[in-house]
Amino acid sequence: MTAALQFRDPVRGEALLRRLARAVDATGATRERPVSVMHVCGSHEQAIARYGLRSRFPAALDVRMGPGCPVCVTDAPEIDAAVALARSGLHVLTYGDMLRVPGTEASLDDARAAGARVEVIYAATQAVAAARASAATVVFFATGFETTAVATGALLRAAPPDNLQVLSAHKWVPAAMEVVAENPNSRIGGYLAAGHAATITGWGVFEGFVARHGKPVVVAGFEPLDILAGLCVLVEQIAEGRAEVVNAFPRCVGREGNARALAALNDVFETDAGEWRGIAHVPSGNLRLRAAYAAHDAAHTFADRLAAAAEPIPRANAADCVCGAIMIGQACPTDCALFGRACRPDTPVGACMVSTEGACRIWYEARA
Image 1: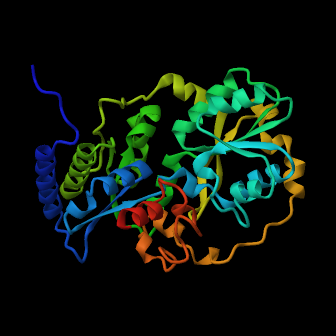
Image 2: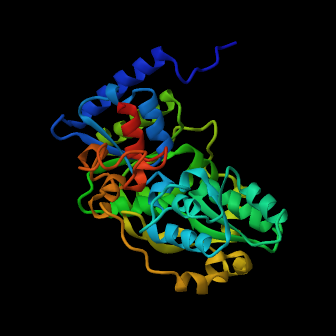
Image 3: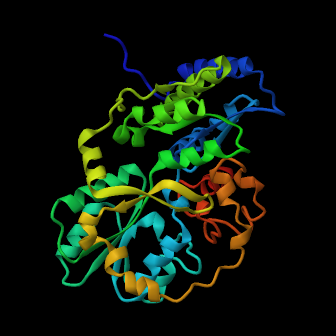
């Protein structure tokens, strides 16, 4: 019998680091003009920080975090809508990392401190349970990428109680990758895609992207060896002038993805153009409820309340936040003058400092 593969094996890790160094050398990159790649997942950035991988990357390799934090890209007006519904007296439920995300003027945590009924849940099924236990309307402020959107879709397909409303701020990650790739100032040579999202969508979803932009995409998992192996395959393609989709997470990801999950996603949601915080307009980037589910669509049901909500007053320092540039790979957290000063986890100015998956929060805690 062969020994089980250990995904934190130091010997294999050192071998992969040597392979990565050779690949970077083959690109001709230098410290002054590095080869730049982007991962689009906060979990990748967490793992890179937790295991100290960035300190071991070759000096001529620049690994940037892209729009891979759903909390970070939830636009301020979407937060404003949830705050407005909470302030109007509705019972609002959301995931914990959304509580302190700043809207234009206030967060849901601010609304709760002022007396609004806002509660944290950890699974979409808890929203259903809360609605069944109450005679009042319950609003689930649903956020996240493909993975959590599937859970929202599943609950709406399962005959939820009439008093459950969903305010969707779900996003579709491949659309944001298109925006990054189309940016004329982008120097990103290839992309490391999130393994858990690809478990839902399948790796085949990236084939069109690679064909359009001529940039390789590698799907990777989240253990140290997963990330290092993914980077090796990605940089080797760049060095060889190739652009292909490679699945470096075959133990979980297939080409077609999870058919049942995709059925729930596609039945309940349709893609729509929308604003992503800091990134601006993203065609087909938002997941909106289809008309068949309008009875549970809070944006439709409470359109009058949202239209009548007072115009929020922008917060101080908001204009100086560079979260948008960070999320499209044009800046690092330390490039922001607010980082670690006016903007810290206890006093976040931008969404990238709020979430545990935000680049600024991760960098701040890793250096602390």
